[in-house]
Length: 244
Length: 247
Image (cartoon, rainbow over the protein chains, first blue to last red):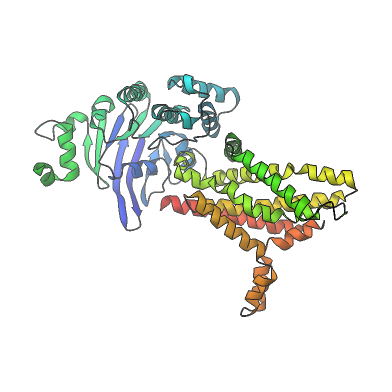
């Protein structure tokens, strides 16, 4: 179980995340929605242990990220925004490094790398340096490092951002395949993604949660029954939404 | 046990990344060409007709001054610019393991460069009978000097996303450490500062510790001095990264 308790983050006098709490259980795919700058990435960075929260914490399968970061981080697979990686390395070397840091040695390490390459369909580019790959392959390489250790919790920051429709389809397929066994959190501002993969969605605006429910429940909040309208009404305020 | 494994994993990746790009080869060629040129042409190694490596080691601090910042400028600046730091630090390792792994990799890379100067030793052995104890001591001193410069370079790399800024800061910082005991610098202080301060500043200099080792004097105090510089800089890198990523 992933339990986020009253997470807060301030940068100087600016409070980016103002007390976010939610829980996600196994088998759930949580869509984390919000306009750009709403605090999605900051929240994810706190859950994954990259940024220390100003207050609050996240309990990752029983491990507190603020007091036992190494154990908590071991439970998570993380795909950061824009899928960063070590550009000069080949796909195989990069995944080998990830496997090593994740504690795999010898033949187990090789097997893990092979399995991840196969699962993300990277066979054709495995010996290529990452900086020579297309955006879709880079995304999948970073995705491969996130699932290589078969983590119970998968956190992805805009996993389909900038991909073409075919590549989006592939990524969503992979997410759907894993959904039953894992806790998955996906941040996105693409609403169609919520309908295609998420079992539940949270809408965040200005650092606070403004809605939390299944896609159907969210839709019912708007007379038109469309997610876009709910999203606009909740994130830019009623007045502005009516005027456009 | 796991912490040693994590340090090793980061260390191996970092060392490999030097050799995956042309950076390592350009660096090694320039390092060897520069030390060779300075030793044989500028300090006239042959004309001295003495079988020792003084003219060789004499140049090391200045070559390090120029080249070590280039070898270390990417250590953290590049990770931050490309956001791979987010990947690295969300893996089950601690920040200090990552810092230590990177430092050791950069230091070993410099050690490889230093090791490749072995033909200079062979030449000296062919021409005369150098005191191998003194030669070895000089190499140990040079290695420690390189480590100190690497640790400074890693610190400046952690302070910025820009490799150029990191390079310039490391160069200035290393230069200050090198010339802190130099008379024109101490002279500047003696005019207005009390004696203890002048001596204090001079004691920070990397130079005197290296000079005694060049002469073949292996003093534990010199080793401890270099170790302290490195430990301090590595710890400072840790603090700098920890506070910057949360800011």
